[in-house]
Image 1 (cartoon, rainbow, N blue to C red):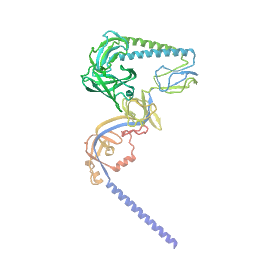
Image 2: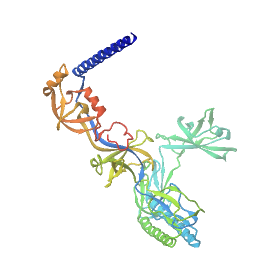
Image 3: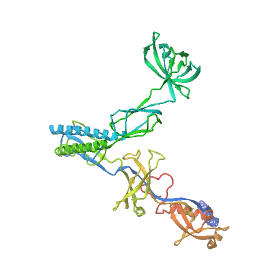
Image 4: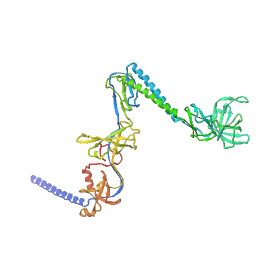
Length: 537
């Protein structure tokens, strides 16, 4: 009895399972059909914009020329001539090993060269001083100078006096002066006309002078504007206004012209030309005279010969010190230094690293699928997290003829020369984007909106109430278009559609394509390039 009951229960369970399974298959089938018949379409419009194909990757800043210097013999360092960060020319002495009197002779020759180079620099500087300019505005009174005559260094060409401003130099006692400061306002009373003119303190003497009536006073210079009614000799009574009180001068003093400013030469030579006459009004910065540069140019050429001779003397001594002198193999900057005076060294020990910090580059490993899309002179954009928002520019300089294979994938090194290196340092991490092709103001569609029919590009321009009807009338609801530049996200529409036209695409097909397809090629670069090992955008 119990066994029959158990069999009954099992049979009932099997029946239920079959019913449920069949129901589930029916439900699934029904819903699948329903889903297909109500397949969702997305609507998108043709827009205008920019599209860009590029290749991006991370790299580091390198130098076009970089060389490690090593010792070619063992010994003790007598002197190191360079320091880290110093610029050197090819052949410059980096250091000397101990060798006795020969090193001393070289030291003397180097000092002599420094002296001659300084003389040359001074002469070249003189060329910038052949033109003499007025340092302030006013009326010029020429000294006894003429064109064609020689004038000594620091000689006076003339004196410029500002006639629009006059001054009075008045005495004040010590207590008054202690409360005064340059720039403080003053009232100047003309005793003949009782007119009051505003002025200001321009100078306070540091030492006292004796007054005619006895006692001592300090001279205070007051500047006053001359609007046409002032003339030297007019008597004044001066009051200076300080923060605490007003102070009257100890004596009445006459108005005088301001002290003129001399126009002087900085070099000696013949006056080639005078551009002003005695009594002319000159502006600040106006050209006054020019010194003949013939003698200076002759002296420069002669001094260049002296420098060359001193350099040849050093070169001869260096050749005699081949075993003990280490020289720079290239022109550049010392970016690391491993030795100091007095160090004992062995053969092949490192001395320093010299690199050209002006001619910088980056090397980008490019996938073999993309390397043929790159050519010399193509532009590149370089960015770094160190300077957010700053873009540096470069150009493709070299493309490797031989690739490097790793894990079955070959890459080719593309060298990019940087045209702007401000603030960039060797070894700095950067992101590089090589621009393959770029177009502005073109018609664009998302890649999901375009389907391939053989070699043709097709878009859906209309949909029906159901998927079945849409597919049945696909010929009427689709259109063949001509496409151009394409990326992973967008496609350029060359012909067949206009801006604002509406097209449709299946969301389900788009999602399936996104989940299951990996399209080769390059794409649209949006924002900062990703650090993806030569990934195509």
